[in-house]
Image 1 (tube, rainbow, N blue to C red):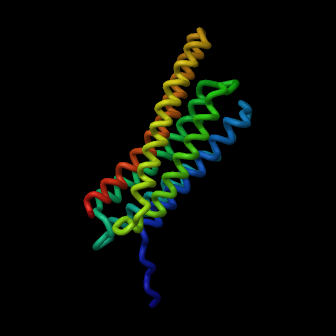
Image 2 (image 1 turned 90 degrees about the vertical axis):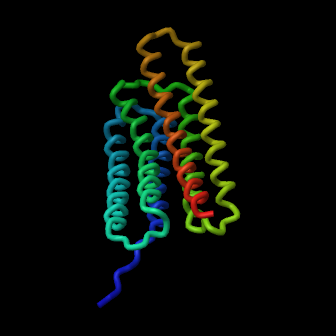
Length: 207
């Protein structure tokens, strides 16, 4: 009988990260080439990515339940998988807000934010690819620091975007809608930093 292939949790983390990166690139493309009438179709596409990510995460959890000796502590696997999934969810939430608030046009600073989110997800993906070597890696810490730096860029971009919003608009509906959307954009960067924190925790536990 053929031996069952062993599940690789580190590859599983990278797979989850790939879904986040796909979502980020899709959101940036939507914002850059914004057409309100296409949003319902794009939401379906985005949800398909998010659903595939959920299936991959559930598969990891099912395998973990049967795992005798996982490569890192179970609670760390569970936490990290959830944190990566939170990134994909946060990105989808931005698109959902564009739809439910019936946003007709995109503010100029939005594309800067979605571009940064793509960079955050690329940085997260690179860190997770290196994560399998965490016990002897000479580059993982640098990648974690870069993820933290990008989140700080997100904080600065958030402050500037909100300030500019209130300097240029007096419409209460527009202020309410875009304050919420900008907060959701910033949350995507925060979610990536949460992943960096989990990776660093595992490294510290095993050093």
